[in-house]
Image 1: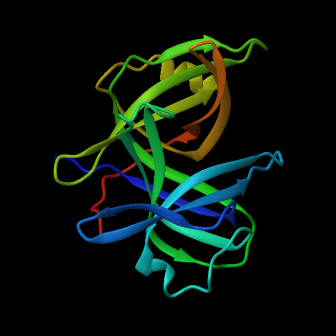
Image 2: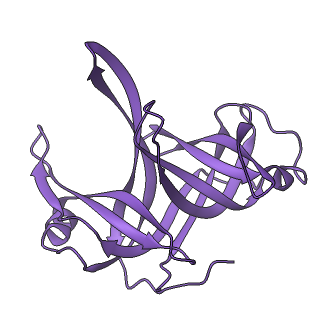
Length: 206
Protein backbone atom coordinates (compact mmCIF):
# COMPACT_ATOMS: atom_id res chain seq x y z
CA UNK A 1 0.00 0.00 0.00
CA UNK A 2 1.25 3.49 -0.85
CA UNK A 3 2.47 5.36 2.23
CA UNK A 4 1.63 9.06 2.24
CA UNK A 5 3.60 12.09 3.30
CA UNK A 6 2.71 13.17 6.84
CA UNK A 7 5.21 15.41 8.62
CA UNK A 8 4.61 18.18 11.11
CA UNK A 9 6.90 20.60 12.95
CA UNK A 10 5.54 22.38 16.03
CA UNK A 11 7.24 24.86 18.33
CA UNK A 12 5.44 26.40 21.28
CA UNK A 13 4.89 26.10 25.03
CA UNK A 14 3.19 23.48 27.18
CA UNK A 15 -0.34 24.54 28.10
CA UNK A 16 -0.27 22.05 31.02
CA UNK A 17 2.10 19.56 32.58
CA UNK A 18 2.46 16.17 30.82
CA UNK A 19 -0.11 13.56 31.84
CA UNK A 20 -0.48 9.85 31.17
CA UNK A 21 -2.19 9.01 27.86
CA UNK A 22 -2.03 5.23 27.37
CA UNK A 23 0.19 2.13 27.20
CA UNK A 24 0.77 0.34 23.90
CA UNK A 25 2.94 -2.78 23.50
CA UNK A 26 4.44 -2.12 26.91
CA UNK A 27 5.39 1.49 26.12
CA UNK A 28 3.89 4.28 28.24
CA UNK A 29 2.79 7.38 26.33
CA UNK A 30 2.20 10.85 27.75
CA UNK A 31 -0.10 13.63 26.58
CA UNK A 32 1.55 17.04 26.13
CA UNK A 33 -0.91 19.88 25.38
CA UNK A 34 1.11 22.33 23.27
CA UNK A 35 0.10 25.96 22.78
CA UNK A 36 1.29 27.48 19.47
CA UNK A 37 0.69 31.10 18.44
CA UNK A 38 -0.58 32.01 14.96
CA UNK A 39 0.62 35.14 13.16
CA UNK A 40 -2.75 36.71 14.08
CA UNK A 41 -1.93 36.30 17.77
CA UNK A 42 -4.57 33.60 18.31
CA UNK A 43 -3.36 30.37 19.88
CA UNK A 44 -3.91 26.74 18.93
CA UNK A 45 -3.70 24.15 21.70
CA UNK A 46 -2.71 20.83 20.13
CA UNK A 47 -2.47 17.35 21.64
CA UNK A 48 1.03 15.87 21.38
CA UNK A 49 1.56 12.23 22.32
CA UNK A 50 5.11 11.07 23.16
CA UNK A 51 6.73 8.02 24.75
CA UNK A 52 7.85 8.63 28.33
CA UNK A 53 11.42 7.70 27.40
CA UNK A 54 11.52 10.61 24.93
CA UNK A 55 11.09 13.03 27.84
CA UNK A 56 13.96 11.46 29.80
CA UNK A 57 16.61 13.40 27.82
CA UNK A 58 14.91 16.77 28.47
CA UNK A 59 14.74 18.94 31.60
CA UNK A 60 11.59 18.40 33.66
CA UNK A 61 8.65 19.70 31.62
CA UNK A 62 5.88 21.74 33.21
CA UNK A 63 3.28 24.28 32.17
CA UNK A 64 4.97 27.04 30.17
CA UNK A 65 8.03 24.98 29.18
CA UNK A 66 9.18 25.58 25.58
CA UNK A 67 8.99 22.53 23.33
CA UNK A 68 9.72 21.67 19.70
CA UNK A 69 8.04 18.58 18.23
CA UNK A 70 8.75 16.73 14.98
CA UNK A 71 6.23 14.02 14.14
CA UNK A 72 3.05 13.22 12.25
CA UNK A 73 -0.68 13.80 12.64
CA UNK A 74 -2.67 10.76 13.80
CA UNK A 75 -6.39 10.11 14.26
CA UNK A 76 -8.58 7.52 15.95
CA UNK A 77 -12.31 7.13 16.60
CA UNK A 78 -13.43 7.85 20.14
CA UNK A 79 -16.14 5.31 21.02
CA UNK A 80 -16.44 6.30 24.68
CA UNK A 81 -19.34 8.68 23.99
CA UNK A 82 -17.49 11.49 25.77
CA UNK A 83 -16.02 14.35 23.73
CA UNK A 84 -15.40 14.48 20.00
CA UNK A 85 -15.87 11.31 17.96
CA UNK A 86 -12.70 11.90 15.93
CA UNK A 87 -9.58 12.43 18.05
CA UNK A 88 -6.71 14.20 16.27
CA UNK A 89 -3.24 14.30 17.85
CA UNK A 90 0.42 14.68 16.94
CA UNK A 91 2.56 11.56 17.37
CA UNK A 92 6.03 12.78 18.35
CA UNK A 93 9.06 11.31 16.58
CA UNK A 94 11.46 13.68 18.36
CA UNK A 95 11.32 16.34 21.08
CA UNK A 96 13.71 19.20 21.78
CA UNK A 97 13.81 22.64 23.38
CA UNK A 98 15.10 24.84 20.58
CA UNK A 99 14.96 28.62 20.62
CA UNK A 100 12.91 30.35 17.94
CA UNK A 101 9.54 31.67 16.90
CA UNK A 102 6.41 29.57 17.28
CA UNK A 103 6.11 27.12 14.38
CA UNK A 104 3.26 25.05 12.97
CA UNK A 105 4.11 23.55 9.58
CA UNK A 106 2.51 20.42 8.13
CA UNK A 107 3.31 18.53 4.91
CA UNK A 108 0.55 16.06 4.07
CA UNK A 109 -0.61 13.96 1.15
CA UNK A 110 -3.43 11.46 0.76
CA UNK A 111 -6.66 10.60 -1.00
CA UNK A 112 -10.04 12.31 -0.75
CA UNK A 113 -12.42 9.82 0.83
CA UNK A 114 -15.61 11.96 0.86
CA UNK A 115 -16.99 14.53 -1.60
CA UNK A 116 -15.63 18.03 -0.83
CA UNK A 117 -18.20 20.47 0.55
CA UNK A 118 -17.97 23.99 -0.87
CA UNK A 119 -19.85 26.64 1.11
CA UNK A 120 -19.79 30.25 2.27
CA UNK A 121 -19.29 31.56 5.81
CA UNK A 122 -21.80 34.05 7.34
CA UNK A 123 -19.32 36.79 6.35
CA UNK A 124 -19.34 35.61 2.73
CA UNK A 125 -15.93 33.89 2.58
CA UNK A 126 -15.73 30.78 0.41
CA UNK A 127 -14.63 27.66 2.25
CA UNK A 128 -14.19 23.98 1.37
CA UNK A 129 -14.34 21.10 3.86
CA UNK A 130 -12.68 17.76 3.03
CA UNK A 131 -11.65 14.48 4.61
CA UNK A 132 -8.21 13.27 3.53
CA UNK A 133 -7.14 9.64 4.06
CA UNK A 134 -3.38 9.43 4.65
CA UNK A 135 -2.07 5.85 4.59
CA UNK A 136 0.45 4.56 7.10
CA UNK A 137 2.38 1.34 6.82
CA UNK A 138 0.81 -2.00 7.77
CA UNK A 139 -2.57 -1.19 6.22
CA UNK A 140 -3.58 1.61 8.60
CA UNK A 141 -4.73 5.11 7.67
CA UNK A 142 -5.51 8.44 9.32
CA UNK A 143 -8.63 10.38 8.29
CA UNK A 144 -7.91 14.08 8.58
CA UNK A 145 -10.46 16.92 8.33
CA UNK A 146 -9.05 19.65 6.05
CA UNK A 147 -10.25 23.14 5.26
CA UNK A 148 -9.35 25.51 2.40
CA UNK A 149 -10.28 29.15 1.82
CA UNK A 150 -10.80 31.47 -1.14
CA UNK A 151 -9.32 30.40 -4.48
CA UNK A 152 -7.91 27.23 -2.89
CA UNK A 153 -11.43 26.34 -1.77
CA UNK A 154 -12.67 26.48 -5.36
CA UNK A 155 -9.80 24.28 -6.56
CA UNK A 156 -10.41 21.71 -3.83
CA UNK A 157 -14.18 21.85 -4.33
CA UNK A 158 -13.73 20.70 -7.94
CA UNK A 159 -11.98 17.49 -6.84
CA UNK A 160 -13.65 14.09 -6.56
CA UNK A 161 -13.51 11.13 -4.20
CA UNK A 162 -10.37 9.13 -4.93
CA UNK A 163 -8.35 12.12 -6.16
CA UNK A 164 -4.86 12.56 -4.73
CA UNK A 165 -4.16 15.72 -2.76
CA UNK A 166 -0.82 16.99 -1.43
CA UNK A 167 -0.60 20.14 0.67
CA UNK A 168 1.30 22.36 3.05
CA UNK A 169 -0.57 23.89 5.93
CA UNK A 170 -1.03 23.92 9.68
CA UNK A 171 -2.91 21.92 12.29
CA UNK A 172 -5.29 24.15 14.19
CA UNK A 173 -7.82 23.94 17.01
CA UNK A 174 -11.30 25.44 16.96
CA UNK A 175 -13.65 25.77 19.95
CA UNK A 176 -17.36 25.33 19.29
CA UNK A 177 -20.55 24.65 21.26
CA UNK A 178 -22.94 21.72 20.89
CA UNK A 179 -26.29 21.12 22.57
CA UNK A 180 -26.66 17.64 24.04
CA UNK A 181 -29.75 16.62 26.06
CA UNK A 182 -30.71 20.27 26.45
CA UNK A 183 -27.27 21.31 27.72
CA UNK A 184 -24.77 23.39 25.77
CA UNK A 185 -21.29 21.88 25.86
CA UNK A 186 -18.03 23.47 24.73
CA UNK A 187 -15.87 21.24 22.56
CA UNK A 188 -12.66 21.54 20.57
CA UNK A 189 -12.27 20.41 16.97
CA UNK A 190 -8.95 19.97 15.19
CA UNK A 191 -8.49 20.46 11.46
CA UNK A 192 -5.80 20.99 8.84
CA UNK A 193 -5.82 24.50 7.41
CA UNK A 194 -4.48 24.31 3.84
CA UNK A 195 -2.01 27.04 2.85
CA UNK A 196 -0.92 25.67 -0.55
CA UNK A 197 -1.19 22.59 -2.78
CA UNK A 198 2.05 20.77 -3.65
CA UNK A 199 3.42 17.79 -5.58
CA UNK A 200 3.93 15.75 -2.41
CA UNK A 201 5.87 12.49 -2.61
CA UNK A 202 5.42 9.31 -0.61
CA UNK A 203 7.79 8.50 2.23
CA UNK A 204 8.68 5.65 4.55
CA UNK A 205 7.96 5.77 8.28
CA UNK A 206 11.02 5.50 10.45
